[in-house]
Image 1: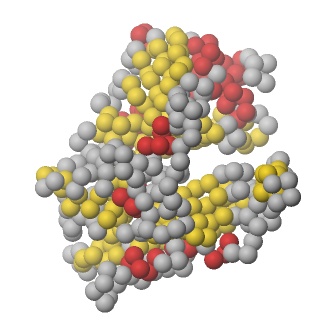
Image 2: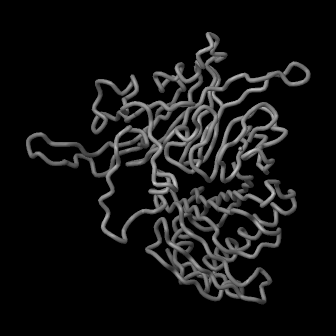
Image 3: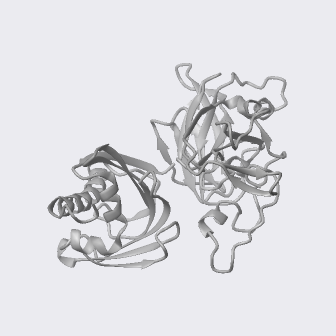
Amino acid sequence: MAIGGCPIYVSDKPGNHNLELLRKLVLPSGSGLRVHLPGRPTRECLFSDQARDGARIWIWNLNKCGGIVGVFNCQGAGWCRVAKKTHVHDAAPGTLTGAVRADDVDAIAQVADDGDGDDGWDGEAVAYMQRARELVRLPCDAVLPVTLGALDYEVFHVCPVRAIAMAPGGTVVAFAPVGLLDTVDATAAAVALRVHGCDHFGAYFSRRPARCTLDGADVGFTYDGDTRTCSQRDPRRINLSQGKTVMAPACVSDEHAVAVSAERLWKAFMDASALPKACAGLVDDIAVEGNGGPGTIYTMKLNPAAGVGSTYKTRVAVCDATSHVLKSDVLEAESKVGKLKSHSTETKLEATGDGSCVAKLKVEYELEDGSSLSPEKEKDIVDGYYGMLKMIEDYLVAHPAEYA
């Protein structure tokens, strides 16, 4: 399963399971998405010590419609043959840099060849980053830079881009199925252009598809013109023929300068008891279920006089105190822009000085009909989040001793 091609054993104590992670490894039926081969190191990893000499671990594997590359920073500790235990030789290993290529999946050409004697592949591929949730098209021999902090990792799903048709005017239409975007092994879910499992399916399409059909019926989908990503939720049998194809939630992002250090703002941001004080008149109370890490649920009781509803409930998906990144799925909210089928936010704080930082916000959403909001309504969403951020900033500026 995942990258190694081997079984995964879960030894958590009862009640301590990371359900968000387990859902990325198995389908609702309980079956797993399994790669075709044993996990193997990429060529550049051979004959190096990935725990000591600044080398990184690149593991590749293969699926029916694409490949997968896992990149890991495992510096700082390794197995001691004398003491017969793990020995920590560097308590603060540094950041590693490198690059991912399509041909890091050593057998990627086998995926591109459909057996008709003309594989139609010129070396181009798309790479979907599972943790960053970004899709990039890689021309032949192009490289994708990677930076990994201590014990950090990323999973890249590599899919050959195929020319499948000619559009009016002679423009080539290119396509690559990515798979289930919310699973660790996304490409394993796409088999001969049939999808195993359900939830969020994505693919690359160089032109906006005319239609998407699911079990023979037209369904909505979203299309990102910048990344050429088309996505659809809850796929069963998706028709991916020309003019009837799919794929990522609509995304809106922005950034604001903040006159408070990233460390102070993060501390206040993550302290539930601080928000009713900092956002007086907007937030009345917060209930917390969890320890603040992934899976923690925050239920925010809002002041009715603020006119933004009564409850805002979120579940933490990612909480990285080192890089100051918080990503949450919105479970319950009253929105001015209308009913959203799904809704998630990601906030990243980047230091710009001793007493300042920049707050970067990314909001992903889906509407029930698969369409996108108008730019004005997308701005309303962003302004709502930055309004709360501005209240926290003003409070910290007025109380310089707090969270210092």
